[in-house]
Image 1 (tube, rainbow, N blue to C red):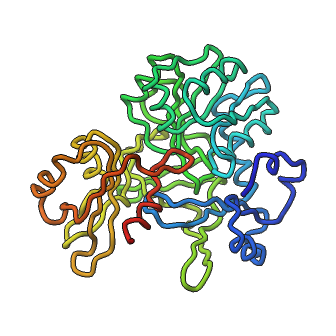
Image 2: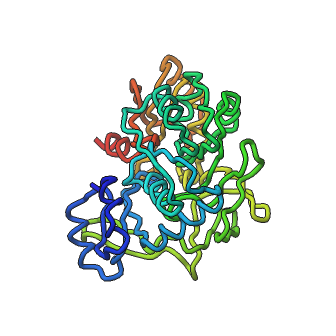
Image 3: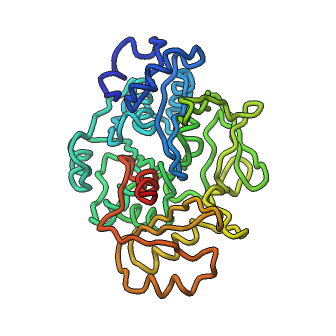
Length: 358
């Protein structure tokens, strides 16, 4: 697994050996035989579908992306950045690259995540720019932790930021800037310039267009390829078409500003009907009063069956489930004390998928 010291090595950006950021030994050996992966970093991601894959990003794409974000956020040598995300994820890696480009100070928050400790650290070190995921922002709001006075930007990515949560954080003084990005684009594509701004303005250098109801993007920060693993070993393919990458995101694109509406790939066919998993999860979250995740499992007859994992109250699950039409009805449900999360604060759907198959 790649560590911060590896990225800070003076020879890091010139080294042409491919690097697997999560340290997968078999993939590392295989990648060294692939000429097209020279000077690339491979970031592991399961996406929203729970399917394991690695995104191959060239070092030039990562550097280009970091330069664009530095310009967009107007990061200078006077700024102090904090690293509170794993460096082997593209979100954490991007913070280090931006600090190197801006020749500014950056500090690693090494303690176990705890909202007040993080705020105290930022206050003590006079941090000016931080990057967090929505789960961490939720922790700050729930603990009613005020923002340190030195902070001028809190970039929030890695998942959808609910407007109500953003407003609560802003009321505590946190200068929240919602962002939209993905591992496939080496981090941010669109980021607010001011807290509470309507829509997310595209960062200079990125192009966007609609293909049907889905967003497609183009820019020098895009991935080179996707690596997957199957029965025949590792496989590599480039998903771009004429330089454009079709995302799975439904957006409202107005000029160079976008609003994220949801995910196209959270819909599955069951008994011939299209079922919106995101809408179902929203319903069950409201009914149980906690976090939920629905995993769709393959089924020969129905196409898919649904397994609900949830926190909170389980007293009415069976009754509510029986009221749903057949395609939206759960096959199984499992109450957990806490859902599993990745280090970036996302629900670990890959782990739940494996649990669901057992």
